[in-house]
Image 1 (cartoon, rainbow, N blue to C red):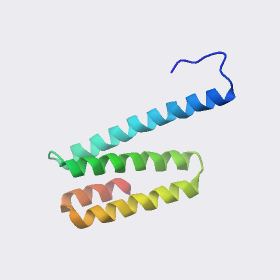
Image 2: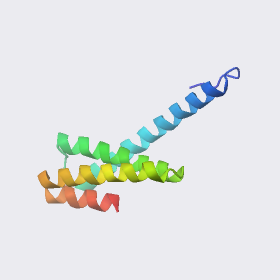
Image 3: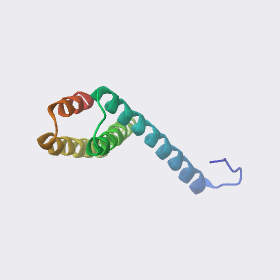
Image 4: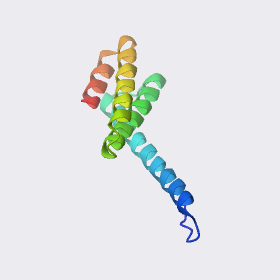
Length: 104
């Protein structure tokens, strides 16, 4: 997005939020790709979806903690833990161990 010298404070805030969102998505994609590489084999579709969600939540938790929004970060952490527990019941042990290592 280009910066407009005539934009007001609301437009600047909206532009900044958009830029931060794009940055988070890029970081989350990188996290997901790293998880897939550490798996050592081609991940299934369900594993790819899970890795994307884990990557996004991990980046979101870090960002919220950096912004000192601990309540929201704790909520995202609980969501991540619930997601991993549900997947752990159905997944292969190697994926469960990899994800457990990721969130610690």
